[in-house]
Length: 135
Image 1 (cartoon, rainbow, N blue to C red):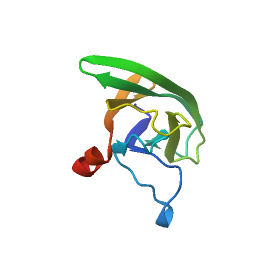
Image 2: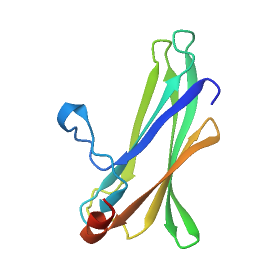
Image 3: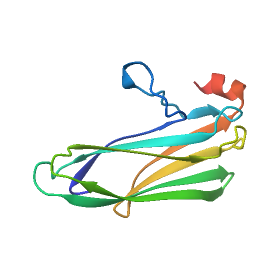
C-alpha cells in the first residue's frame, strides 16, 4: 500500500443512517433478523492533490466451520481516486433478501488491496442469547 494508508474497516447490518450520520458497527448479529451484512473500508490517498490513480480492491467473505474456511463471495472493484480525494470510503455487502438465511457460524471478511491482504475481521451469527452475551 505504498500510495495509500489503511484507515479502518467495520462491519454493520443496516444501510440506514443513525443520528449524526453514524452507523451501528458490530461483529455480533442475530441470524433471525439479518438479511445483508455490509463492510465499510476506508483509507487515505497519499497521492492526494497530485495525480489520479486506480486501486484494485477485493472484499472476500468466508464462513468458518471448524478448520474449514468456505469462500462465500468476492466483491471486486477498481477504485478511481481523483487528486481531490484524500479519504476514500468503500461500502459493499452481501447476503439474502430473506431474514434467517445466515447459519450459526463464524464469518470472516478479508480486505485485499492491490493483491495484498490488509486486514481480516471476524463476525458472528447466532441467536439473541449470543448477541447479548458478546455485545
